[in-house]
Image (cartoon, rainbow, N blue to C red; front, side, top):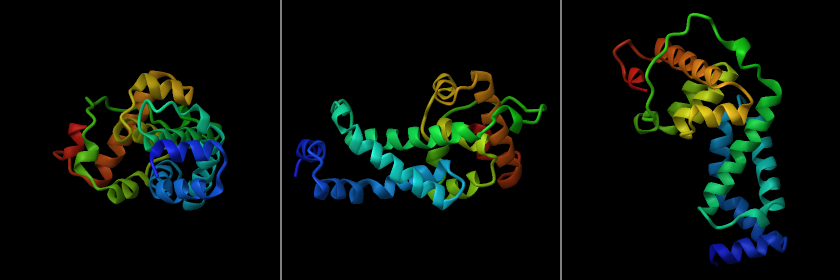
Length: 179
């Protein structure tokens, strides 16, 4: 069955096709949600929310990118909406944050499981911003808009996350300095 046929059947609320979509994309959606949510139960809840949104808004998919990418974007947005309600980004920072230059190279250096383990030690705000910037590839302006924070707060959260990860997992001459 072609992707356009799958989308058409989902628009018609065909439960077998919806189940196929769920089984096909749920593992990746869960992996994405798990990076944002601290515990498995919250990640599973976000997976369900994401697929509910996918099936409710399937008519809005314009085939201008991959279907999988669209689904994963919805999953990220579901997680961010949930986290925005509960996270105070400014309250999690220490005032003596060191500014570092940043490039999006972390995903080339670490396996997904390693990233999940490392991110679990970060406070929620720092974890979310690190995820969006280093893993998902968002810019600080986009992160600020998504989370309702300033670009400066986004940068501070990222720097805090990098410093905490560096102190916990790496020596001072390690790859995290290249981020």
